[in-house]
Length: 294
Length: 294
Image 1: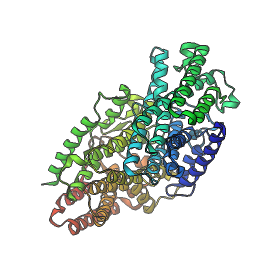
Image 2: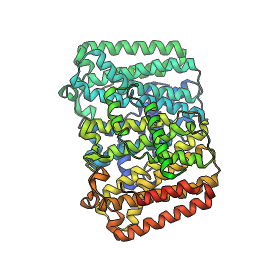
Image 3: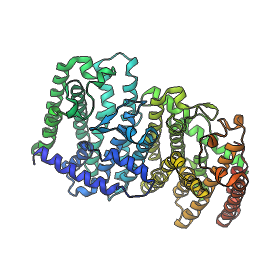
Image 4: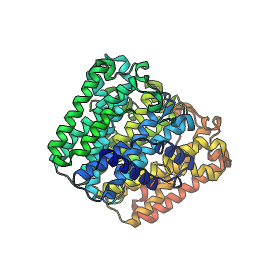
């Protein structure tokens, strides 16, 4: 199957499952659910759930339904971090995915609480489904490792504190590894674990996943410098205005592009070594990350 | 053992264990850990962990070390909700437990992220320890049920939205059940589950725990109206200024006091029915909640 067909098919599946797992009419305070769903259903590529499903299938998983609670929980967690990241006290963004950000619609208090609740409900969802309980616990451990003090949240702290530090490619990589790459890696690895893969297979996927995350973020930096706002669905050149520590800001656009291309080659090489003829989707993903316009 | 001796002994144990589980020098970004620990070590009664340990011991658990990761995780989660609750966009509180609130010391962005990270690290901690994995999963499910869209966060939404609703004792009870009582109940029940108790025992403790939580919150409302700021460690009469929906605001101080006394009697009666001669600590706890000055 062509990579884009695969991506589109799984994105639709994830959207349908998110609707099933977290419908508008459910328990809890209606306005809170509405606010959570506003950001959760605002589109996006669903990359983390798709990576989770991909890892599951590449590791030999055959019934994709089995991994859907965990895959969808990843998107809820990603949405929680975006809502908090956009807050006035953080990046103060008015638009996300072409729509007003959560706090612009529901106010800051609700946006803080909607983010909190998305994480909590994500953990609840993560515990559902038919996977064996020890496996679920191991996957949840992988998840929390990737988003805590040394993961996404740690990366956000480094990101907002970078103003007081010397901007180097090393710092940019440190921020990106924590803020993006580690969670992308975990998304893939959680799917691989869900299929009951061996330690060897898990660790090989770990490297591929981390490089995919890093590649995604370098291209994100480049697009912030060069992209069109209408295509991006958010303001461009914001990183530069804010003095963020990015790859283009430290090694320049040309070197950033070369770094991205090298990473994509590395990912493709590793995928072929690991998966032989089954490497096509990973290779397509690397190309897609490298050449995306938004 | 006298209840206050029990409380003091377990509070010391919880404080020592929190230090062990989440020391200043650990992985992650140092300033983030510092900010998390600032609020985590700011004192407080450690009621939720103590209730968890109490539930474990009353249900027949003999090695209290076994339940400490889960007990301490409850305090980290409680601290997360307090930090976010104090934010300018929420209750805008400058003091908590006699100290400047987290955002007054570290700024809003860090306070938001410290809250997020405390929850994530709490889940990581919750997964540790020697309890069987299926039991841990069940306990984690109990926890997330009690703090999500129909728990603490749902209660906070109701609380901040109450301005637009008619204030009745029913609404006050709805807010308190979600914002406080359900999580207090879960704290006790998680300990009971950890000891491998029967469904019957779990459900009986559930009622006792919920009533303890409700009692705690009614007295909190009363203290906000009548307490001394120096004793409370925070401003009093803030609920009234903010037009919060509380019991004293809806049924008056005298009726609130009667309601609290009736609840305490109910808790003591249930505890005697359930625990016979082992009910003393729960009875002492009910008295303590009823008569506390801060």
